[in-house]
Length: 287
Length: 260
Image (cartoon, rainbow over all chains, first blue to last red; front, side):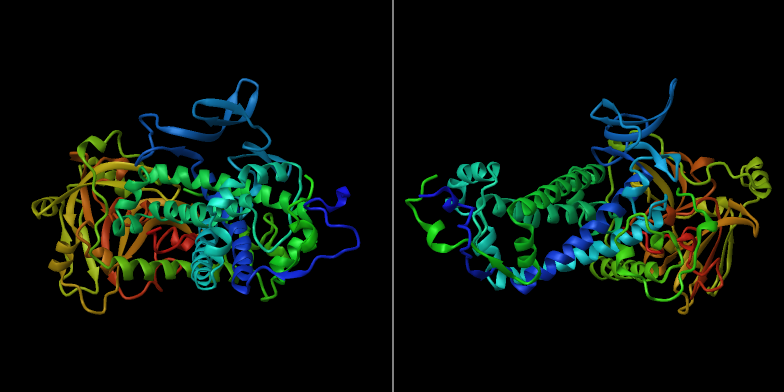
């Protein structure tokens, strides 16, 4: 057989069928998350800038040291520098973290102006934007959860099965070679990534966010305790943000690699161009 | 706390905010504290307030900690050494002439001395102070439950909020000196952990933390707990106070409900 029948590379001239891949509830909530996570990230960095130090435990150590991350600007002998300190290890991050340019001038701020909403230092507005989109995220996540339980999307498409785990090594190899099978079902890595974000990272974001609210603490004192204290919850909130940004970058790279127009069509209209079924389904196909 | 630049205030007229400009992180839309969009988004705070009141009601208690959790002095924030002549004179005489006035919508206005407050039943609690900036600090606070003072003054049914007036000037602007002020609703005012604190970590409240008296509102953030208070007024609306948002920071863009 010719190599162009290999998985992920449909034969030229033969189009696979259009399959209905994404239900309306999935598509709507996907875009609600895309918009709200964008604003949550940039307003969150604004809020972080108000006190750019992360700690473990219930409180922030001023007379003792329990900090795990700090993004500061320091006056060294050679002028002002941006310094990022992670678990005691120090890095010079001038230009990006700690000290960056705003309107052509040095600005002593943890995250630079282009990465925050609003661009200037404005904690009050950052909080307004953050909590507005936090509600959007919570509402859309709940709607999605209900919709996905009702239409079977969650169990059928997202929860990894034993066969997915067994097929994981081959799927990793396929991803490395940028070989994608285009079908209705998600591949094992997709399932793990989507389920990980929707069922682990985003709920963790909400839980750690609530653990920082003194009013929510009074309602659920077990929550900050479970998460290791309010300041640990704040640190986990930040780490989950880093993981979500990592997911976003891989998500974008995979879409570009797998065919951006087809992928975009499926998350806008629901319809997805699958590989020609007879060829890719053949078990005797050489690999 | 955050610095504000009043000169940056821009009035956004017209409702046609292009959706594309929303997606630019460096755009000016969010730099304008008076924008209509910001006002709509700030409505989420009212939702948070209602939901937390609905779920938590008036009775849920803030976490309390043990002596072992007190590991450092309480970090002061905001004004930590009032420069006001009136305050400095009160301080020089160890607050012998200081009074706490309870006024507004009450049947019996009060003017209490420090000795009178010290003679009232007290509550001591080890709690975590959460600053809006993000940090936390655990300390032991001692004071009179505000509910006892309010009961003695007999709050009228028209009252909806307790407003605290302070002795410290937080801002010197063109419009004159602005002293700190803030407010809470009556649910928090009558909350068992809401105390008028005169003691910190077993000692008299130091100047940097609000001597002679500050409020503790344990289910909200630090900016909701004014220091150096000298007057509590019961009101039914904020309209006549500051710019009408219920507090110094609220008038500068911060949410009135500081429970999140």
